[in-house]
Length: 65
Image (cartoon, rainbow, N blue to C red; front, side, top):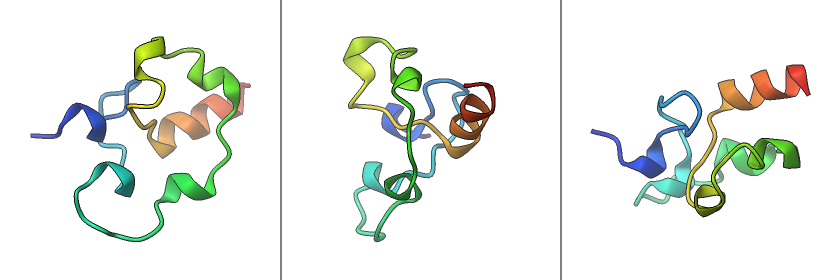
């Protein structure tokens, strides 16, 4: 079972974020991405630095931003 940190807060699927795992897997995909500020405004304030958005949801947001 995935922990809360391993799930995207929007779709509930795995976010594939290396930063949420206990293993040193190198630089995560999210470190190379640009996240528009507006996407964080959709999250509850207490989740902003605790959860990772998946690439699919990020890409979808960027299409409509």
